[in-house]
Image (tube, rainbow, N blue to C red):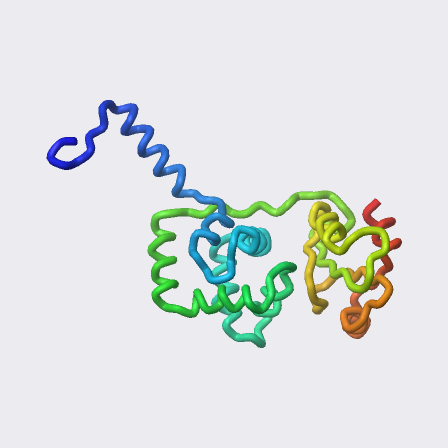
Length: 197
């Protein structure tokens, strides 16, 4: 210490210190979202938001637009599998607060979050939004969702006009009816297994 100020012992120490600081200026998108401390958003939901919106700007713009519960942005946010009304409300409430938006603006002057890369998987369902409904007979719902995600599909918990495919098992109810009303392709679990190989 010199006059109460820490002094580096050599230039290499100074260089290492600045290298460590600069390495933190480009955080992974999901880590930045999680670090904001948004109510009900932990590591898992932060990862889901990052995968869905790809950029911080995309996430923030969607969150601000989702303040209108009749908006497509709000419906899209709810269609992310694992994000329910409680989590979405936490995100909307966070960005509704002016001081939070200002803090984020100031933070983004210091850091540049990395773009989240979506899985570049080659499969018949890559990039498609799928919904599972009814009872699955050869695998659990969680196994089916994990399988779909690993093949590059987006799994949603609800049917909308953006749904590409509904996999319906026995006992399928309102989701199946909505898919039929919207003209969304509906297949059985066996057809799903044949489709994905």
